[in-house]
Image (tube, rainbow, N blue to C red; front, side, top):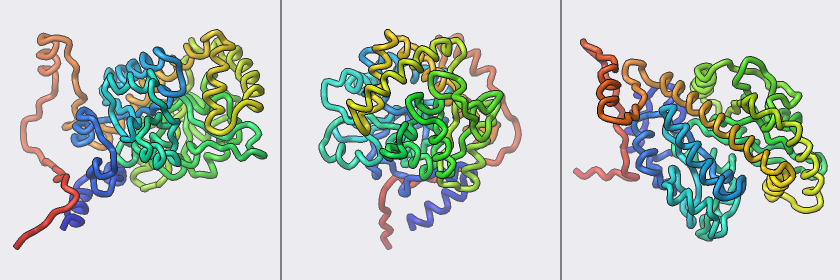
Length: 382
């Protein structure tokens, strides 16, 4: 009977949303994930939700800038009308949507914290320790709880010299098998951009630049010297890409590359020179998942903190773009007459004026509804 109810509820949903329901039981807790009340309510009412990674908090920035940036990014997403869902592991428990106290726990790093990709989940959960989820780990959790879009700074990729080391980020294979859209400032500048784009093509990942041309960004600069396969001029068109992927039920993700704002690109060459120096140092100092944090730390030191300012600026820009895409995607999945973006009034007067400005439809209407079974099992007695 439960299977029949699942099939019936899926049939009532729009095709794009239907193909995005991923947690088989549609009961998030059965996947071992605790979802905040804010995120849970948004998901159940089909409001736009944007996932955020936590490695940027635990391994990407020093304290307190990491905490300040995490809170600012969530604020930007809310201002655009979407709901942020920062994903992390705290004491062996996966969370989607963190409180201020939980963000502080991760940022302060008083307890050991593991950079957590797909492969690391069993270990981190079994040991009951903290984990900052990477692009790969965040995509995996996002898929399980039905969040179709995720914002980060830059994805991992093919490392320089990978032809002999085989050092290729799990982010790329995750994009090839997990139907979540990732919004980033391209790939990190420390990587081999050309080979990364080739690898993404092999994985069947749709890569697009959000902007007037196809110049692919590499984190700190707007043009890496390589072109993406395509570009979209607006968040609405990016959302349409998401819808068409969902309609075809393509089981791979998409990458939307957002160039760093022009006003923050001036320092790009200085930072690139610092990266070259840091990469050479890393060759003899670290390996594997420790390479990226090492290089980012050294670039911060060499540039006197300028790289961190640019890093924060591009992440905030990505958050705004990702939230706008999420809003447009929600409109595509919901009849225009029924989707009303949430309002955040500052006082009673503004609340009344905004409510009064909403459209009122008088006449007949057709209402579709979905009955969601929350219990993992249903027993029918005679």
